[in-house]
Length: 100
Image (cartoon, rainbow, N blue to C red; front, side, top):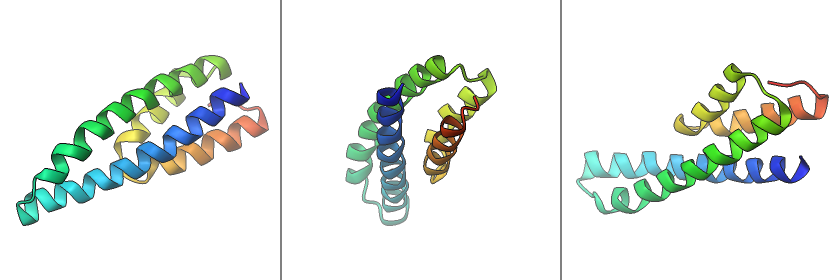
């Protein structure tokens, strides 16, 4: 379980950072007409988000999260800054032994 939690934590931060980079790339694309950053960051974020989903579901199954808690953690990778908050909550709840 410790390994699954560590993998989840790393991917939550990585996905959160790349989501912020994606937002910057979108601003550059639509405000400055520079779409090259979007062509690079978009697919990378998508690939990393897929890994985040797999690792989150793995952790959810091991810790017996509810469907609602699992869904909220999965959605957290799509909203800027929310994956950082979700990661903290998952760590707190896991340390307390409380399922999501």
